[in-house]
Image (cartoon, rainbow over all chains, first blue to last red; front, side, top):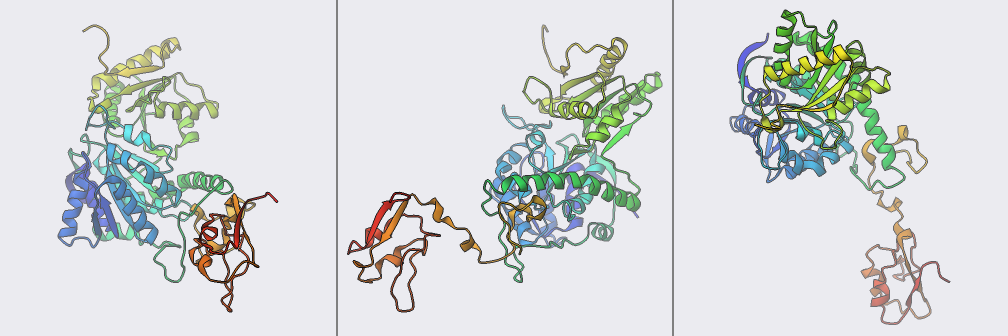
Length: 396
Length: 99
């Protein structure tokens, strides 16, 4: 039986962590994810979990302690945002290359500078090639649900990779929504016990983790990581199917919202998908065949599936909440366009960089994207594929 | 644990380069890093015992009779500390690979 609750995205994440009751949580506070370790340390103080909470002195230490705990054989978790993730940078790669199934809540925020504490995806995009599985969450419910699925994915023997559960800072992390919680016992039953095959505190098998890995070996170990990332697709699908059987809530690599009979579509991630759905509904009432593809699984990227799902469209706009500053387009745009290219699908496509530094993205702006797409459908021409949405430019 | 070497295919390698076995540092022969090579001049050696104690690599074998023998070049990195400490000039440092 699900429990109806009203929680912010951070609370929902902290509650998921409480129900999972990991062995170790090591975290350092940083806006907007501060509340996650804050709530969690309350659970620790109240004896609601038996987790060892490590109040570290920096995010580098938070990730290091998490790595140490996981390597020792414990289930370890952390949470961070933006510059906190930047400070973890070195250890982020250690976690994935040592194949430690750590789970982290990443509450997305702009990486400074200039200094900004509000939401965009520049933190997540900075680690997109770091070998972590990355799931994005449109709302509080998805942040909670993705967190419940994370350990099953990370700890699967064919995967053994760390998982990052992303949600939009403030927009979902600090907004209270009605959500469905599952019971503690059911969560524990679903997540299961962590039983690592090899771990440092096993006195029957003394092992070394993270040894020197020079020219003769590193290449193969990186290829093993890539293989695990490909394997993760199957596991993410299976875990979501089990999750659906349990809760009735369905999760796929991406959500197709009124996409199958659409002529044009937006591709985006996290909370902007909610705004886009409202616009799609409005446009549908006017007879406009608008659709949405909301990416949930960003790493591994569902290359064939995205290409297939978009192939029937006449125009697509990819929305990036982080600018790659490469003069060529945002990260999601590059992934979607290359997915289409290698799968021999061609659809006129444009990229919009939007919402940087927490800039609000309104229904009106999303509507303007669909009217731009309508023009592309009409003419078949794309003048400038690299665009901005909601940027002040030119004369006032 | 099965032996993993520079010809092992990726499928047979442990993940993350983990080593599921203790006491394996000796399998990593670091002697090939050496650019200087100590030469043991046994006729000058008085077996005073100063050299093996300062060797950072434990590359000077000492037998049950408490006498040292020639260097273990699998691990000697040629640092020359032994030559410096020898009071009798019984260790000569030479460039590696030069006769």
